Length: 170
Image (cartoon, rainbow, N blue to C red; front, side, top):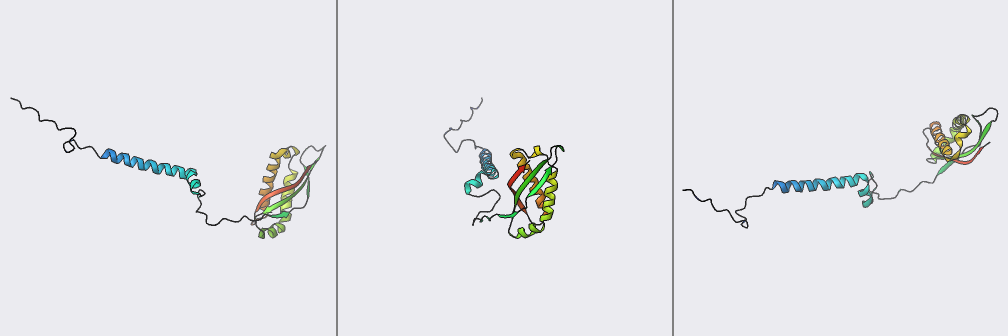
């Protein structure tokens, strides 16, 4: 004779239920922690979190606001250059400008290097064609080229900008 199977435990009885695996809960908890850390890192490196906290990305917290420096300018003499173009109809450029320098200490260095600055400016201007100076894009390219040449001429001083007070093309 066969024995009847043992009675199955009642489902409501916690002591007799088969033990559930704690590994699934541990994996879900670890995934949640990794997801939160990944989201926080993404917010930090995209710059959202530092802005929310009042920090600039990559900077330590500000304790005191830096005072802006007053601009320092060096006046350049008027320059007149003939432009590279049609030899039958020569074109001329008259330029009045100022150099904005980094600090007041740089003014004397720029004044000492003024002959070199003027030479670099004149040789560059003589190679330009009148078409290259048309429009705001031409003026912007001229400014960028003159800043680069001025910085080469006045090392170790630093020129921040070339400001045009007058540009005439004839």
